[in-house]
Image (cartoon, rainbow, N blue to C red; front, side):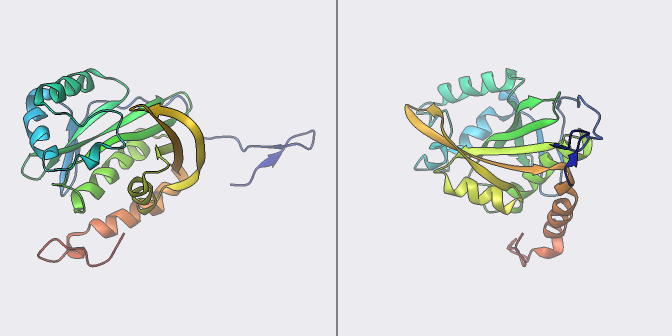
Length: 229
């Protein structure tokens, strides 16, 4: 959409037609074909998440997260207890079709006044990596943010050195916007932060792309994709 010019001849942004503020995300269930997302519960998901994350034998999946890896289950469950109580980030557990907890993700930095929200604290266990489950989980969260809540902007931020995260964001349709240098620290080290986003007017074609890819006929009997996203 083109910018406008005011009465003084200055370029200004176009008037928004989104009614603000937008609703805050809630602890809801998001149901898909290959997985569902439900509010994180230590009692319901703690043991299964510990087991799922234990499939990562090297701990590499924890490198770019602000917490972990956890040497003991008790410490992990303590982290999950704080996560379950948190309102922002708001944690969702990913369940496979058998109801087994295989990962989690969050909506965070929730700005209902501006209609901006971020997806983050994504931790997908090896049980769901490179499967339709991981892609559909992200699709379900995007659909909730744009179609149900009506947000204007959906953000993805990660360590600029986290090449797999940046590649995943690009595959999912996020547009790279730049790097904030020395944006924060974690685990005693610097983090330059890569920013990416999807806007509300970009969502409809992205949604169609996801739905084509997620069609069961796009996968062979072994669950391997026939065409890429």
